[in-house]
Every structure is written in structure tokens, then in C-alpha cells.
Length: 301
Image (spheres, rainbow, N blue to C red):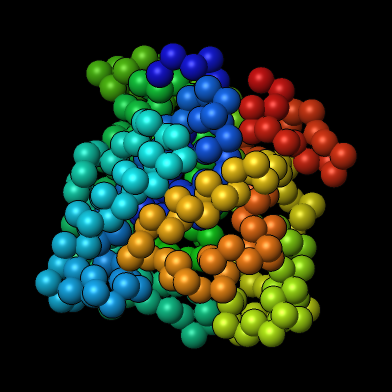
């Protein structure tokens, strides 16, 4: 990694990175900045949305993780990301699965595999990321918030691993065999703008679309899935790369309904996915744009 500015993105499963940060990653890769993606599991227990591939599901023939390995490789190639790593190596940590709580957020399911990421020893998993941080030596680290965005146990665990690894990687006396210590200057959590979510749902409902974000009222309670705008520190304008992001998302074929109204390229969908939002949890806020948000995660560095 020879780029002067480098960012590490930590995600739970294939496709999470494209949904949350695809435009940011494509933008930075095009600018020649260093982009490293760390994926914690292969998503072996994910839902298969393509009927002809339904046999890959965990509760059927299996093999979804290996298939998604190919999907994410294709998606990263499309985004221009050349440094993709599996936490601890491919297959080290298994998808934990999930269930839906009555309140509408994800929780751990009744069955969690013994080797699931959710069951991983925190220090053991964090050490694998410490090695990556000390190798890449990024100025920026991006992961989920403490709720994992929507409660998925693997997202919550990825948050814990990323935050703990950042602390351990900076300690000059911690496990020197993992590399020379490195302190990440800025840490961000992925965020969904509350105002953007409300506006987008409102536009969809006015257009007659009741299936996208089903059950969510644009004027009602949004729950923990969104972040109040005054807490958001950065908005990366990915308009130039929104088509790249959407096309990369479609390459996660088992996970995305490419023919659905939201992913098929409707203008409302493009507007929704074009900007990516972040909460700054470590480091000083850099120069901001007209809306009072940083326009670059490296701002001020």
C-alpha cells in the first residue's frame, strides 16, 4: 500500500461494504487513495433471493459462502478496490445468522453455529485486525455503530472488533509480533441520514411504492436505523460514482433483487445511494462544506 492516504473499511458480510460505502470506496480508489476492505465472514447464512441459486442456502445444500466470495470479488473489481482481505483468512469466522425481533430490528437467531463470528473471542478476532491496521497504517477507519446499523449480531461484533483493534494497534507495547504500533487518526461509523431517509420514503410513497422500506412511515418513528442529522460529521458526495455503486451492488446477485424498483435505477434510488454519511467518533473534524459537514473523510489530515 503506497498511497499517502489510506482508509480501512470493516464489514460483516459481502455486500455490506457496497451498500454502506460503495461510492466512497470507488471515489477514493479512482483518486489513487488506498482502500482496504476487511470482511469478517462470508455470509454463509444469508438469504438467497435468486430462485435458481436457492440450493446454496445454509439450510439446504450449502455453499453460499463460497459463492459470495466470487460475488464480492466481482463487486470490488467494479469499484476499483484491489486490497480486499478476509478477517483471519477466508472461512476463519462463520456467519452467525439472525432473526427479526418484533420491534423490527435484527437479533441473534435461536441457532448460532459454534464457529460463528458472534461467538468469537474478542481479543482473538481483534488481533487479526490489528495485523491489518499495522500493515496498512491507515489514517481513517470505517465501521458500524454500536448497534451494527440494524442489530445484526455480526455487525455488532464487527463494530466491537474494529474499535478494540484500533486501541490495541496503537499500543506501542502490545504484541509486537503483530507489527509496529499505529494509531488511526480518524474513526467513523456508517450512518443513515434521518432527513434523507424520511425524504426518500416520502417520495417513494408518493410514487405509489409501498414495498420499499415496507412499514416505515416517513413522518413516524424511525427507530435506531437512522442518525439525526446534527450528529453526522461527514457527507461524501458519491454522485459521480452512484452508477458504479449500484452496478457493483447488483453483482452481489444472491442478496439483491436487481429487478426491484429501488435497485433498478429509479432516480429516487440513485439520489438515496449517491451520498454516504458518517459519524466521527475519533479525531478532529476537518474543514466542512456549505451544509456544515465534512466532504472528505481525510479532511484536516
